[in-house]
Image 1: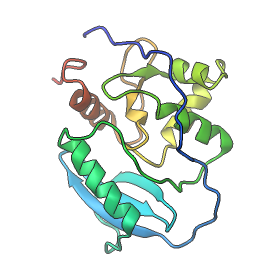
Image 2: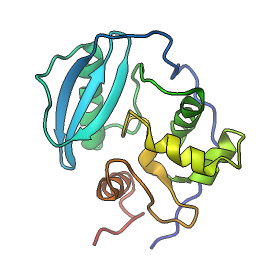
Image 3: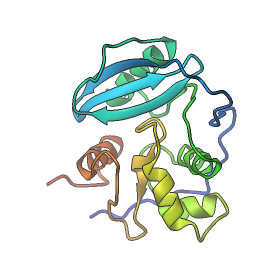
Image 4: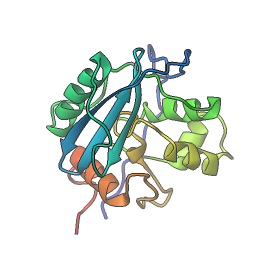
Length: 181
């Protein structure tokens, strides 16, 4: 396996308010088919609530401006025309989860970080396992790049959407980083 690049010092993300400030109840849903599965996109009137891989659509599409914008940007990403996302968020989580998800946004496209790197980034170096748990609860797969987090020894570890998808996403972003058997 090729030597994994180390993530440089991560800069704070500016102008992204990850924390949900309202209790939105009305959700809009849409779907996007990709080479690695069907993605279900949900959003409130304020922003994206979730992006998950699903086996099949569970309801009829009812899009809004946030699901529409997400579909456009995901298509661009999947077609190698986008490396980062510019979307409004309205997902649910704890303060700690928001802190971890914010740190995930600072991992550059085509690079990886370890759970330990993320724990250090949030000034909580002993929280490696808690970082892994928060990473696994990320409701905005691909958009908040939890797939860019790997084990300290460079191995692919845990991904709520499956290691095959994680490997595909990492290979998509950096063709030379991982070999697909």
